[in-house]
Length: 385
Image (cartoon, rainbow, N blue to C red; front, top):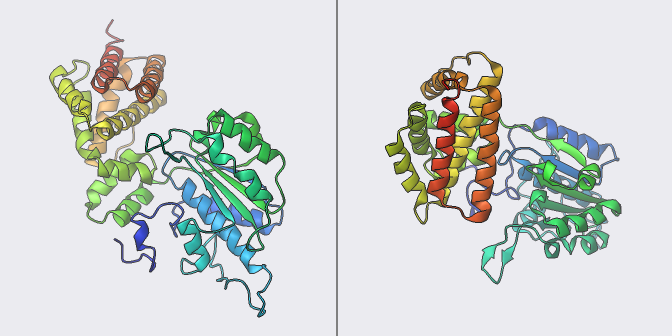
């Protein structure tokens, strides 16, 4: 546990979950946009916070929720003795709210009466978290927003993530967006806004967050997992695509070791090392190895995306001091000319479709991995046919 954790927040774990996290990295411009919109007195009633997974969208949403609720507490009616309902700390900049405030602690615990959070819930019949947000999960939003604010200020709803709403839930939220009460705020977190109803997108002000820089991700890896060596933190950052969430997931599930196995296989192309491929396939096919498969799949998808960007650029990649990155750069420069760009895009489309079906249809993970690499091997032989 990091020594800088405010007293009383240790129980929420490390790294802290979004509703507890008192810091935000890399999104200063987005903070300023939200702060300026609030201070203008013309705050949009709904915001769609978009960007890749694991970059801090939900952290920003709860940070803004605390800021708005804290500002509401500042203007709340005094109690019977003439004192404010809760002392409000000065804002040192951005959307910061002091973690020592009772308001911060109530948001962290889920006990703030003017904040309603929507996320996937436990299915009591299966004792598992549902795969989607249902109409039942969002049913309480409307009565919550139309009730009088318990603390005299704003009422805030955070939906994390809006992509996970099924059709019925999305339609229910749309009705709320069409007729929002005053001094209410809806914050919709979205990893893929194209999956949302166009009518929902059109009724929200959009705030697109950018991926974090490699240096920011590496610094956060070192903060959240100080046992990781500096060089490994840099390697994780490079593979994570600007997502601290992805970087920490790679660290947890042996991503660097799996990446070494993956790149060794890729280096054997176009004459694929089938023995090594079956060995990796056996590893991801084990009964409890779903996280291993997901890690390999994301590493493969990330590598393929970099290959396509390299093929589209049509020139050599810039040199780097990272030895692993230099090795990958040489591999990309060798393989990219093996097929035309449209063939690589075809491989990308097939990859995404197959991985999506794997998740929904519980397909054989080893066979999926074999198919991905055999298709890649076929593409690298395109120019020679």
